Length: 132
Image 1 (spheres, rainbow, N blue to C red):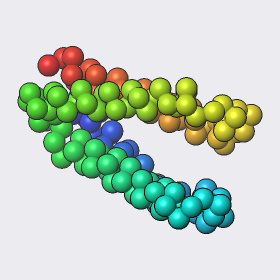
Image 2: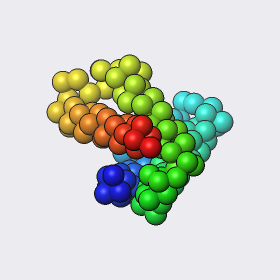
Image 3: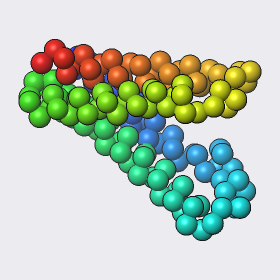
Image 4: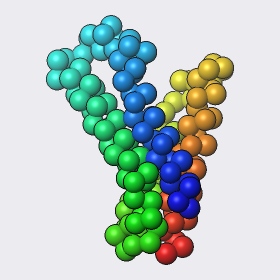
């Protein structure tokens, strides 16, 4: 399981850094212009804190894999992470519209990759939790 946590941690830190390109990739300068100042700033702020949280989750997995697997506190943390990523998986299928990816090659590939990733995260964290 330590290997899985190291893989997950590295991928989560990479995902966190990918958030840097969101404003440009999603054309937020134009797309968010009709929004009020508070809503524009909330998008940027929330994106930053999501990226920071994802990075810190990844850092925790890379630097503390043994503690996550072998301690009571680690067991509770892995349960929390399992629940968090289960909700993210749920959102992938039941909150985001299929219109965002269906019939679009690149978006469909990204949808599938991240769906598999969310399943992987959920499975590993629940496996650690229930094996302790």
